[in-house]
Length: 235
Image (cartoon, rainbow, N blue to C red; front, top):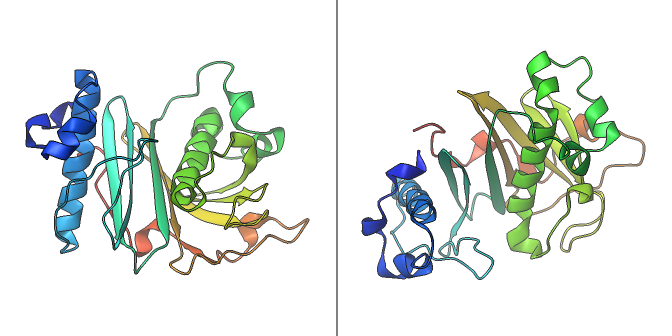
């Protein structure tokens, strides 16, 4: 959804208050996310409630729901899933353009960059943005449980066609060092989309030293198609 389509006037009073001091673009972006979230909760047969924000700006999802909202300058996307089906979800959307000059070394390691050798030329050109998005989606999936800020260096990403695995390089309770999170990614109409869905039991397994996490069973997390109801990117 284009954030310019956000209907600020349709927000609940509590939601409008949350962005009353924001610039108009941010207000519309906020409204677009709430519109998409409300529609997805309707699809799940859940009652609509005002979707306010924590002090850190993350959404306060109603009981029985986990979700994620993401946006870039020209798109907003939302994912919602019943808490009975998943322990958490994180999504990210990015323009399919390389990262600004100088940022790639801050986002991915030489080992992560090396995985793209032999990959299609588009993936090689976008490797920084792809890994950035994968780490953002992972962070958004686990943050409601950890309440800890993760740096890019705290996650190591292994890359495959349509899939990735992010491995936690330090403990972030309740997750141990070595915990792996399986995710999905796609390129669609000029955008990169990534998603991570945590297993409902939140059980994750550490990757044995020396083994490729992408080759391991995806314990504790599921491909995004398994439970999540996602708004279509670009609509």
